[in-house]
Image 1 (cartoon, one colour):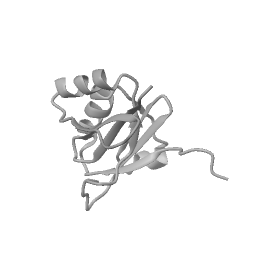
Image 2 (tube, helix red, strand yellow; image 1 turned 45 degrees about the horizontal axis):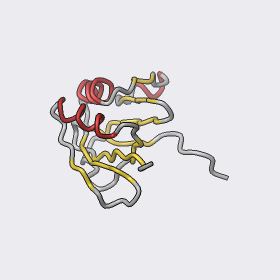
Image 3 (tube, rainbow, N blue to C red; image 1 turned 90 degrees about the horizontal axis):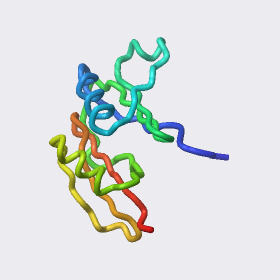
Image 4 (cartoon, rainbow, N blue to C red; image 1 turned 180 degrees about the vertical axis):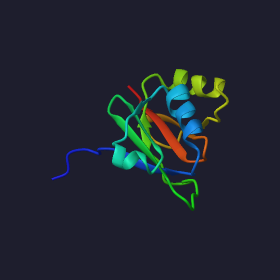
Amino acid sequence: MLTAIDHVQMAAPSGSEPQLREFYCGVLGMREAPKPPVLAVRGGCWFEAGGVRLHLGIEEDFRPARKAHPGLRVRGISAFAERLAARGVTVTWDEGLPGHRRFYSRDPVGNRLEFLEPLA
């Protein structure tokens, strides 16, 4: 029986860890989680915030995920979108999901991210 999603794995190009740290920690407000030494040698970064866990692993033939994406639930989505836009991150609103406010964005290596908040 499945009980939860432990983490979402996304890909990133070699050498992008500084950009990823700046975005996921500095812009999104997540914290970097330590990787076990046996996995740390592979590069990449792990990030956490609340119950959200994103793992970005290095992929030699990297191509950004332009359709596949994590859906990240946000509280105070308007203020969150303003925060991202103020940091130079493109925010694209989409009103196509009934009962939610949502927007899409991209991380610094081009991976698609969805941010959503259920309407009260």
